[in-house]
Image (cartoon, helix red, strand yellow):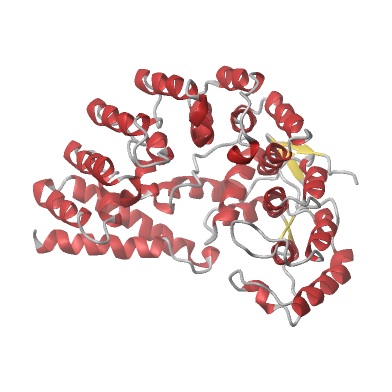
Length: 440
């Protein structure tokens, strides 16, 4: 190993640290953009660096902290570099390489066929549990092999639920909207609800059909499932409608926030954060008044406390004794719950029920664009889907990837939002056309 490449490897770590900074995003975006560009330049240098550059990366793939080495390797065009990644996945599983790195694998250019086939065997032989990250890399490009792989996986109904989102997203990316429509029209095989938690490939197919083709059949299918008696499926369809920024979701979310099923309520809270409508505050207050024994099964946090924090994200306000709402999630005292409920009841008159809000401000495209580089995953996912749904545009932002991969898309969205008038503050729009505010 040479000192030159060791130094460049450390420079890559420094640049990456700035890119993933958790500081206030709007203030430091230019600094993060510069760091992302520097990281890209370093990748190019490693790609052109020959055996000496590859040697140090291979060394670090065997270290206790291999992520940076893999993050560089997956964007190189050198077949030997890609081979190191594929070998690591085969021998140690996808966790060692990291989901962000794997998803980038083959994104710009299709993988060499021998490496692609090797990874396909990893997926189909059920190695290492859920292999959705690997599958996403395999489906980055539409090829004869990737089309056949999708067909084989669709034939395995007993495990399809693991890959619903990845498969539907790939079909949408390839423009196979007829196949998505066919999936929507095909009733799923009966499964045990408690095992699958309501997963249904029709939901994912309808979502991506509506998002990418703006086909009304996708919206209609989601509404049909959302209004059904299958509560777990309905809750997931409602969240998809919220990601599509559809006003029809509002009353549906109000209903599931009042459910006694913690799984359903959890989806209701996520949907409320995406929509940000003041109308949902009353349902949140109802949930906030429930016993703290009614908990989120995945976090063990009282759902009453989560409801109060969602109220904070909508209004941007907390009482003088409620500063804890700005802190990482922790269980509140009953006194804090009661104070918060009284505070939010008192200020609701300051908000228009039909409008969308973010931290007390009427939602706008620039606010949504700022969320693309948030330090929290929730706002990133919200904006990643709301923006193309509202505008009808797609600049290629992927919520599963980092700012280095998404830099061009973020810049494009920032430039567009600075002059666009497609969305009135707090209003509703779909595919570049305004929608009427919901009526309650």
